[in-house]
Figure 1: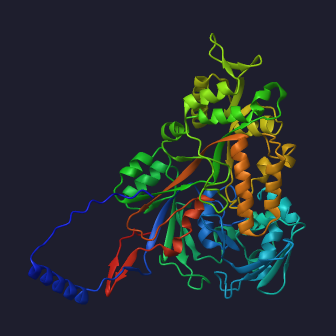
Figure 2: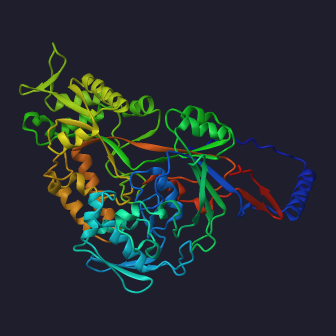
Figure 3: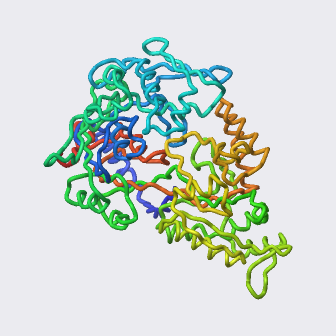
Length: 565
């Protein structure tokens, strides 16, 4: 963290009597005015602008609607929550244990957990939720349905349940972050019936806030009101009412703030970022998104065998001005990436080499590796093979601009790169999955996946038919990834992932570019707001129980204004 340097000037007082007098006055002042720390008090309401619209307030139906997911975060409880470092913490599950062979997980639910209608939350509610997750439907992602099909779950009694896995799988806790739904209200419905159930607009959860009602205008839902749940099993929130209002875009949300209708804005895009930064009353919070932009190479394409040269790949990374990409193309809304495991998480190796932009050093490295410049074309070659290939990129303006920076940077090194824009769906189905590419600019989106587990993208087994699109074939790295998937001790997993990152940095099978960031704004009148790295934008509410609109110092209460609903 950047700290301001403070220059202190010392006043020297030579009159002893004056010094004694000052000390006596100071002692009296301390005795009569003891130092107190303002304490938050309960009360008030907070209103936030969400860019989007309401669909269904049901955690099993919110995979494709961030607006629903933000609201559900406060209404429904999950068995576990992950902190910003990716470490699981108890929520609805008070604690859990894992068998020695890593195939059995026993969980105990929080004592006294209740649904918002007063009914107790039971282990059978969890079993019912899992049964719905793995039922045949078009809403829950197919890979998630397939995963739950392999897991046995049993309610041992009202508060104890057991999950049995076919084989050890240490990222399993990742899968316990689903919002639990009440069997006593939905148990008589199929998944298809649940999609259209009235429950989705009058939800009953077990989270810190209960559904208070919708805010409508001419029959159109304009917002949702949530009220602090008085029987919540955990720490009670300070803010008694949270209101979400829906807006079509960032400009409308910002205007609503200026008119005093809201105190927070869900997401700050490039279109309103300069204006938001100029608002004196707004505090802006930034956190790393669970996304990584990188250049992948096809390491098994025989026509471009030079891409298998790790020295070449290292030089290509060194020749990329990634800071320029962040500053000029992304307007500062990203962090330079040095690896494929997110920084600030428990698995990240702090000593991962940071490759700085150095064009001259990159040129020298290419020359040392035998790639010579052709005086006429300015392009390098080795053994008659010219350094020329095509870089695919998603067909968006931002990706095009990033690709153009890459193209220019590499041309400076003597590497000729042609660009080809492809719609994202086609990029995956026609090029990545078929391995029909030379190089590609892609984004890995690992939202809602706090466990690092790089196995799907870099293990040998995944090179055919899996997501190891680069087809990186490194036995040592694969052994590390396979060991980490079965090891339940976090300290040992940390050591294994550190070793993997060392191998990846040495081989550099793909070039990490940057991690995008999420930007959020809340009025300065709202206290207690904190935001670290995110695994989903709804994680901005990780500390919502500590948010407050009023403080008390001694006998005096300092009330802070909040807009009316």
